[in-house]
Each structure stands twice: as C-alpha cells, then as structure tokens.
Image (cartoon, rainbow, N blue to C red; front, side, top):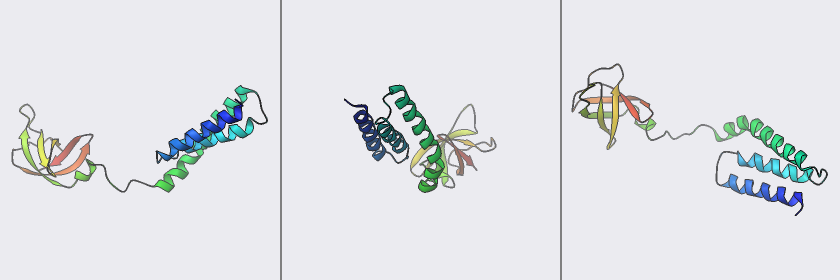
Length: 141
C-alpha cells in the first residue's frame, strides 16, 4: 500500500482517539500524521517521513498546550476529597499509638485523619476539615 494511505489511516485513528478524550493531545498527533501524508506525496524516504511525523507532532502538541488549557479552563468541580474541605466531621476512632490521628465521619463517609498541629483527638469530638493530603484529611478541633 502507498505510504500516503498508511499516514492517512494513522491520522484517522488519532482523530478517533481524540474523540474519546478531552485533552487536545491526540488531535495534534493526528494532524502530524495528516501533514506527513501530504509530505509523503513528494518525499519517498521513509526516514524523512518519520522525522516529519515526529517533529510536527511534538511541535504541535507543545505549541497547543497553553492554548488548550485556556480553552478548557480549570475544573469547576472539586475532586471528591477536595469537596470535603470546610465540612464539619465527628471523630469516630482515635489511633492508640498516636492520638493526633484517627478516623472521622464526614458527609456520610469514614475518612482517615490527622490533626493540623498534632493536637490530640477525642472520640465524638466535632472537628472541621481544613485540608486534604492525598486520601488523608487534615482536621482542626
């Protein structure tokens, strides 16, 4: 089969992949493949075609990142754990070996916690979630 057909198929595959994501990543790789399909009409050397594909894809992805992030903007919805910051919670369990760590019930779920300044926790104490470090909540009595 002719190289132009292979590059065109490659471009279509990347364009279809882009439809499954919202990152504007595969779009530019597909554009690099489409550009290489056009170049393959004039240049038969496969190494040059691969170089054009690689360079154009890298260049397009690199140049489009600031533009794509401006268009997509920041996520308006906080992640599950980030949405708990500021919420009241009730201590359900305190660790035996470290009373600054334990578990709380917040929003109907149980979460592992630690206090902000190593203050001691007490069972049934009301606390406020002030931050999240991974999947551990930081609370303040």
